[in-house]
Image (tube, rainbow, N blue to C red; front, side):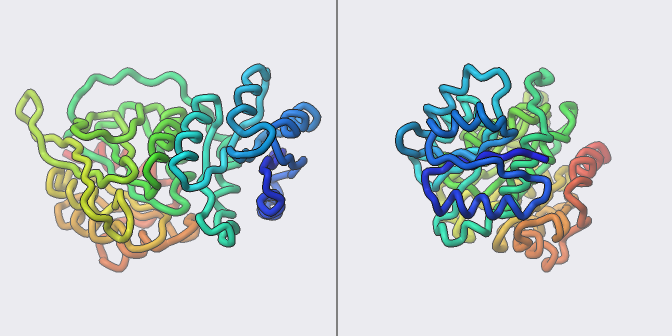
Length: 340
């Protein structure tokens, strides 16, 4: 059993989160608290394994609570729950710096909070099963001649945890992840993934050279465009250009923008995967990759919170394989290795 303490100043949120977590028999709700002061008391009394923690609360907020927890010998895992504001984006980054283990975005419409059930439960379980990887394999800054592309949206972050924690540091490719997420939060996502991946993970910056053995997370609020460049030995590679061009499918970054631009640069030296996500983003870009000779994968429907993005690719008849989530890391590594 995973022992969970729910901390939120809203009676509504405490009730809904408790009801959601009670649906999973492997989770035990050991208590709730409405502010950081009471939460610290209950940590001492109840010894939870995981805390779901609101950031903005009266008396003692989530940030001050994390600062107080620095002195604990065996602190519980912390899942921050953030609202979609620029202020909360800054506070989420600070929370991760203070030791929070992961974060999750609350829906804009709290009436739809029950829609996060699967992602919330998965994230809590991941916190106690996926260890942090503090030591990175030192990589030489070699421009990548092959590329792995991953696109995801709603329900994607827990899947990204599973994939990036399973990739091998020696992978002979750069990895670019495009996750639908508001501006400000992708830096926190990259920092979170960097903790659990044997590869270095960073948020994309304008002019980044795609390097072998490095993971790039598309910066929120910009499209990540991949353009061609030549390395010192005259071999063709890729670099990142951040674009403020209009949203595509009402999102920016859009998977179609990243996939489509990469197809023109890397052609058959691409393996692309689409994970859980709402809408049709990614289908057009995956078709471009297939036409360019790249390899294409989507996750199976039963592993997804939402199957819109993967279905969009399947409807275009451009998918080589439909796989369970647990098989995708191995397939990505094998596909890169098989490329000539």
